[in-house]
Image (tube, rainbow, N blue to C red; front, side, top):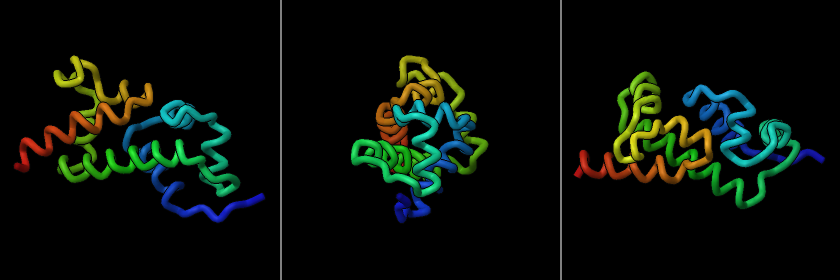
Length: 117
């Protein structure tokens, strides 16, 4: 059975893969899904359950926030690979690979609020 799936899900997955320089297995790990499931979402062969949709939304929100805060993708990639004191000197990229999207979002959100307020 084939589902009508918005290009948004496909685009979000591919954008996250590109910006974070993840492999498809790493993308799957972030979402706690199998690589096969990720590819089925991309092809429109299945639709993510609500829990996955929530994680996709969190990733999309993080990508939006990074695009708002940083001037270009090079700065995003630099930040992702630096140790961040607010993350207990962990690298955001490593936390994302562990599926800890919310924590990275919260830290970056506080930085944006501090600078933009």
